Length: 459
Image (tube, rainbow, N blue to C red; front, side, top):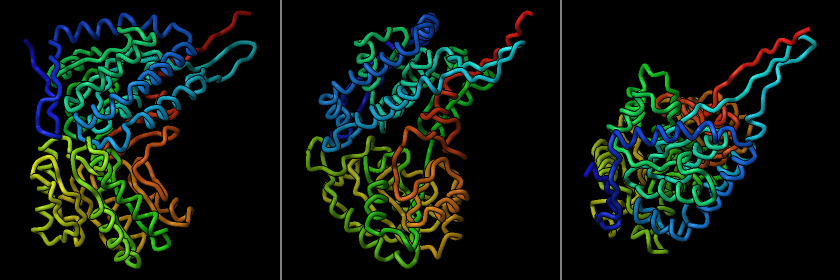
């Protein structure tokens, strides 16, 4: 028997699911099947591929009553939030809607002597490596446009959400997407790296840690395989003196704490203008003190356990180091906090950028809040990070938000919103948050290659 992948439920530490990882030989055979099937899939009419992907999305939605408690068991998100199908459908449906325009030939010009245009050609075989924190929504970002564009897809999910890819593949196969065209694969890290190094794939999209992204780049070195990387984040919020205070507090604290803080674009540091600082902190603390930490299968639970004990340990370490360095904790330890995966949410003040909690990705239910004197200080602090995924600006002045946004080193600028992915916009990052771009028209550009035609007519 090969390497066994085990999903350990954060609810009780028990094994929830396990699957055997494919051997290197079996994994290569899966990639070969995908390559053999890709040309026929790409030859199908675009409208047929769009319709099949839409049907696959709907088939996943039909499973939602099963998926919600299953997600709670695998990674701890409370059932009260209803799973991921809303965002899953929004993203996949948007990419289906824009496909014909996004993939249309680009006409360059035609006259009596020549016809010129650029086509978008599928890469071939696409590997999607999806994370555990939003296993369905993050996967569909690439799976839907990759299939619609004519690629075949292998989907590898994180062990923490071991069953998600299996569910997606089953749903898409049930509506007629060929099994070889969309395959869920169970792979260990070594086999994944070997396949990438052996050019088994034409494009790899990875969502995960900075360390994981480095491993992908190292595996692909010298192969010229295209990579899309969405990695870590330390996303800031900035509350200006003219902001709607109540709206800012509600959105930014939800952005920091939702899903136990385990969000790619979650808010991890907040800068508040000195005029609003004390009121902001008071309101934020009141919100977090009202949260119920507990079993995610309980409909009353606001915050479930973190997905893994080691993730919670990192957050605890960051908090303890900050407190030792002079930070102030505002939220009382909750009785359900067991020192393991169940972790009390926390708000810290009197923090500085010398503390890891304001520099390193926390990916947990903790946020540091700092007082600032104005835009210049806020911009300097927001840019004082090795990450750049999103930034959330709170003001009544859109021109001011644009001016500040232009100076922030980030992939997305929000005004009066946080922790959201608009599928009409390119999902992208800079610095150690990654490279490339998903969703939007640009998502199709990254999942295809341009092919130019210069057709000289005979006279």
